[in-house]
Amino acid sequence: MDYRHSEQAADRGGMPVTTKILIAGGFGVGKTTLVGAISEIRPLRTEEELSDRSVGVDDTAGVERKTTTTVAMDFGRISFRTDLVLYLFGTPGQERFWFMWDELAYGALGAVIMADTRRLADCFASIDYFERHETPFVIAVNCFDRAPRYQLDDIRIALALDPGAPVVLCDARQRDSVKRVLMTLVRHVLDRAPTDDEREQAALQAR
Image (cartoon, rainbow, N blue to C red; front, side):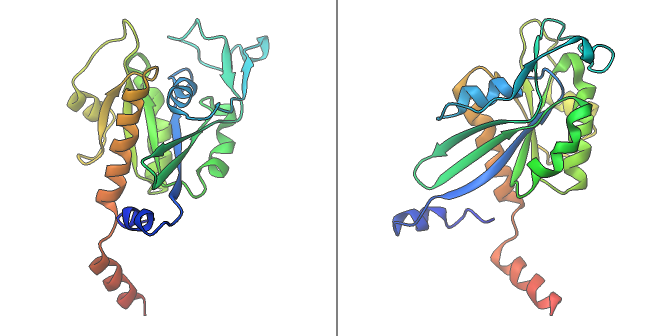
């Protein structure tokens, strides 16, 4: 979807452009916190208490103090100006719930992949998923207290990312920080969007 004409639509009194954004990443990385920090409505959460059944199934190394887990999704909404509304869908982080990703990802414009430098390898499943589906994404490094700090270029190398994939620092608890992450994703999507000339050329080639 092309947002270059969204301001024109707003000037004409048109409806705002709405789109779907996924918030992905490993278990305990801060997805629920991020959605709750930015949502202008009361967020929908599907958290359940961790039980004995998760022992040996869910990897809690590094997040031993976490007592709940998202079993379906988080949902929130944020409006930018009057012409753009983002619907945020937080994905479950544990492998046993990954079967839901295809349903949640359907129709998504892009994704925020959250990273924790204490468990950086947990990002790989999300990166692989969105690369295979050619979904634009940004890496948002959640700055946990006492977590190791690295240069963004070093994180990009460690995750084997393409040079154009944005990597940003964030505090999932802070609304302004989360807003910057989402705007980075929107700009990244716009930068990747084909121009009118490219779309016309593609249409000619398809004939």
